[in-house]
Length: 273
Image (spheres, rainbow, N blue to C red):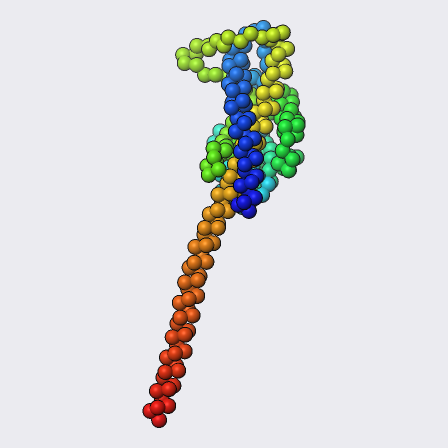
């Protein structure tokens, strides 16, 4: 299993490493644009509303045997709900959408008061941009219609093969860049042909790419965690085998010694008689 995970990890790692710089730069550009919009152009994806209904997207794997990877992500999502959205939870306005079966298994036994969406549990079975962008489009439409006022994603952030950690990303509304003393940070962008028309195309595309990046991050993290877990399991099994071999040899030696003592004692008894 370690060898299989290592082979899958190489592909998943290459995918996220190639995409991450591009996606992060686009995300910074999006935040910068949204922060500097004038009255001549707007985007509904940056509109901050009173938080009444919340959607939490929990991204985990479909399979286990990867240490505490899935548990850590699920616990991070649970802590987010209990602290940041406790009021909405009491009102029954917290919905959790699961990508990957392990997150759903965690929540359905412990948090039955939440609203669950399980339509995309098997999304990792065929992880393509076409499928993930379709899910992102559905969530963006739900945000625009007012079904959800906030959409946050909890996923596994891939650092390297040995290090993965849960991360929380506010996906919608699009965050503006914070500047000291309330000053506006001007960005020197030239929009062609039209600012509003460009925003209507650019903003959804960047959001879909960001959503896809979180899934690639989790996918690579899963294989890294499984490879590490299987390596530790192999080491533990070898150590256990070593201990059992020592115990076996001791027991065998004791048995041989007991038999020799019995033979010598029997021989001595015959000679004495």
